[in-house]
Length: 109
Image (cartoon, rainbow, N blue to C red; front, side):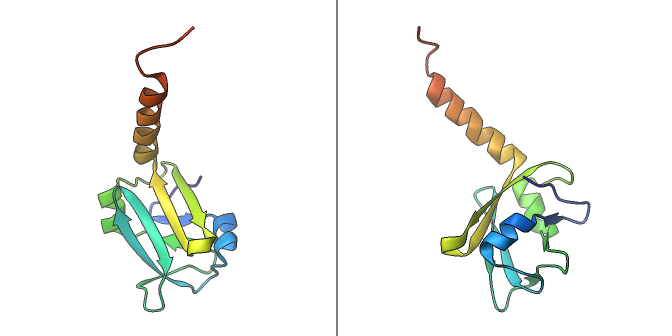
């Protein structure tokens, strides 16, 4: 879990280490179904910062509902060399759906 600063940067060193992404790594940041998908890209428009900060472009933040100070769930997929960032509202929606499925029509017992 991490939260973006006012400039839309996120820093989470453990995730970057798992992906073997260091400062200077060029990346591509794209919105997909309310989440952000980040992949390394030799011609990527964005770069991992010198202190390991990931820049999240304003347009992508707006499309995905990312707000400064609100938590983000970062999920690294090293075998696929990608990072998925789930905004708080997406996590809340997914958990609400899961709870409805788990509870169903009421409590048993």
